Length: 93
Image (cartoon, rainbow, N blue to C red; front, side, top):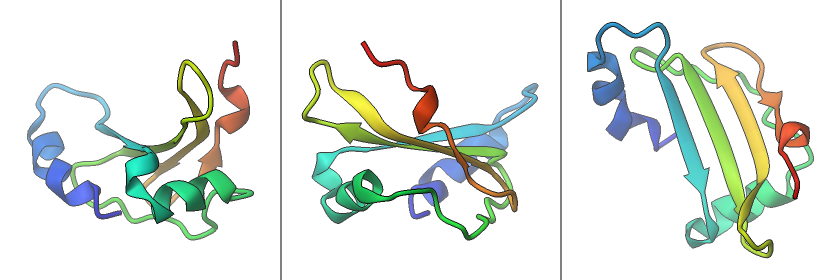
């Protein structure tokens, strides 16, 4: 959730938009966060409070073992809504 704050003001200031989305890409340089996402069986059970400025949050983890690199996890949530696991919808070459 620490990625939300640097982007919140920018997204809140966006005008003439229907939805403000933040996409957080977690790669291997994030160490424990990347491993935790990669090894998770499901998205968090806790609902996220995204606050003002962010309507939808997407979180993806990279699978550095694949070439070309691809996401190994893709989760989505809206404020105070359950997390959705979109991983199965990823296209695999």
